[in-house]
Image (cartoon, rainbow, N blue to C red):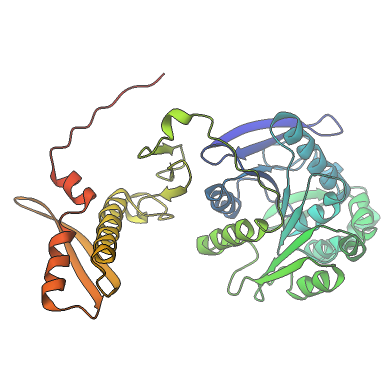
Length: 393
């Protein structure tokens, strides 16, 4: 679930944000800082948030002052103001939801979260993606204009095909910041992610940060990815890695579902928003996602409805065979089932290709084939099913 929100920074400027919530209550909150001159709606950031949501982590992504949908003049901002915006965002989360335990930053946003972490007591883990080892690294983006900036109060520079006004105070600010010293005194779990093929911020920056940091620290190579994580698989991978890594360092309390009516045994909650066909599935103790193929307008992030149907039938079938063989004390080692669905003139046909491994005789193998047809889900979908829809609220 994505909710548009706004909050004020220390200069009383309104900043625009989105809060991505997982199904049910969030186990932890993460705050995301985007790259230099980017905004919160970068596709890679959305994908990272989805992957974290899948693991029960809420993500707040926002636009820094003067960028995206946030108010203010970008020319009046600097690296310090970005840090202050992060701190303001953390205050908003603390007062309205829950204090953030995870900070995630991309590129210069990665450098910003390293500085902000020391000012946000609730933070237990920090993850950087393609971050420079020093904020002044962004100076190379200004090219030959850097001398003009030093001589003038405001200079128009082209970054990523878009014009931005940069003032001398911006250069002075980034040149005054020492990332390595901040990282060394961080005292929070640190995950550094970087691509060896990053042509914007070289991977040597990750090495410098890692050497400067104290344990616990981790490094993950994003081999093959570009700086902006343009490939969807790369950004989803980043989100999955952060979610898995953070479990070791972030204190997470298992919370009861707010709507227990829909979390009894054999009950499932399914929810879809405006983001095409991306769907969350909650069984109470487990969360999953579903989607549609790209060919029909989806993003192919998860299995489709019919794939889930076949998965349900297949899971029930192999579990039933395992239970039966155990009860009979038969030497069944492994069951593999391949399922496919086809539409024919007389109706829909589901074909199961059953492979059973073990020292089984022909009689036992044939009996297992018969038992496959007796699994509860098989009986349910081939029986007399009635579906009743009750409109809530």
